[in-house]
Image (cartoon, rainbow, N blue to C red; front, side, top):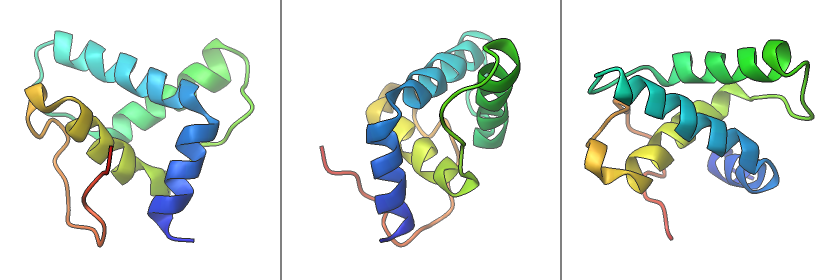
Length: 95
């Protein structure tokens, strides 16, 4: 299974991660940023799920960061390339 396939399975199994990713990215956009670090968003999710909410049933794999960034850029084109991306082998998302 590829990294992208593993991410997609995690994404489907843990929709709350995507919801938090969009929510926290929205906070950054509302603060006036035109681009930001996916790493910072991931660490904010980790903080929220382990400290603020006293734990969760999932662990965030750092390999998933690039795919969440790409998926956000794909799903919210109005923000352009909010997350700057490096090239990977599988760039395109099929709806």
